[in-house]
Image 1 (cartoon, one colour):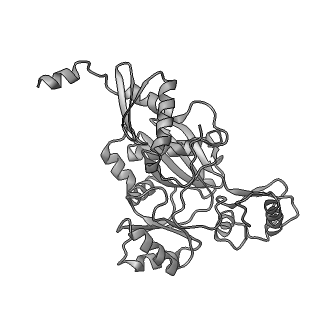
Image 2 (cartoon, one colour; image 1 turned 45 degrees about the vertical axis):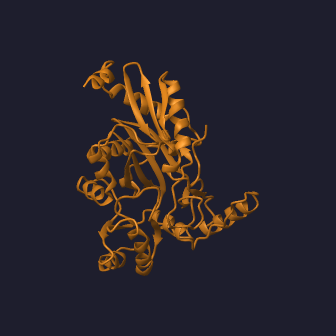
Image 3 (cartoon, rainbow, N blue to C red; image 1 turned 120 degrees about the horizontal axis):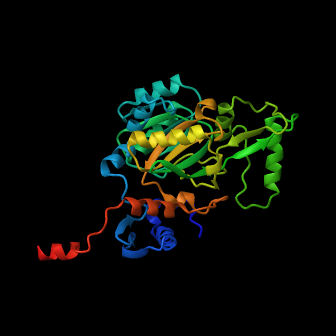
Length: 351
């Protein structure tokens, strides 16, 4: 099956999740029962668990609420020395805070609701000016009174799936890269890339410009300029994704299974972030230009942590092999659920 339905929010994926969980139950020789639309029970022997779409019975409501608060998570991670973007929070009657932050820090910015949303809702990226920041804050304020502004970090987006004390999968939203030949500048390499893309016959073709904000942000992160000459074989990220130049409420769709690419330090950092929040099941989002080296060595950050993470992000990807993530989640649930009392229903009836 393929689980990658572009631009469909997680709460509208009940049919997809039914297939994901039913197939996982079958692999584990467990019984799968639909209790209502989007609600299922999986039972194996003396243990059972219930699932609501993508939500499973692992983290308690307090953990979920704390993890949903982006300001809280940023502050906690910052105090623990975990690399995060520069940020501050404000309300719509505190635009002076926004102005000061933008004027003090260079580059591009992200504005988003501080909590209560997911899937890119209310988020605007690649902001350059205070005026753009105010407009983005107006959008974010529709979803929450508290707003966060962050410095945009150049790199590709990765979702690292933490289950218990293990990394079980990692997905990447693939960016666009150029490879140097030791002679041509980035501008010249990009011209050749645009010709290749233009003649490829793809319907969704769009040209990449060195003046585009995403390209500018990627080059800035790597301390490069359009006239830089890349050495032969040097790979450089020029766009964080192939989504054109849309920067408002863009949902992240992942392309590749990159579990094998993560260095030991990034894996340990993702596990540590989940432990700090006390989450047993989390999607840790990082941004980096190179997942094979520690974040501190390339300006990467942990961007967000998501409890009850959407498993659909980890299906239908290039390079997917091994045990599907939902199987591992169900297995973990079954091993940690209390045994079912056979007389439970009868006992309640007698009372």
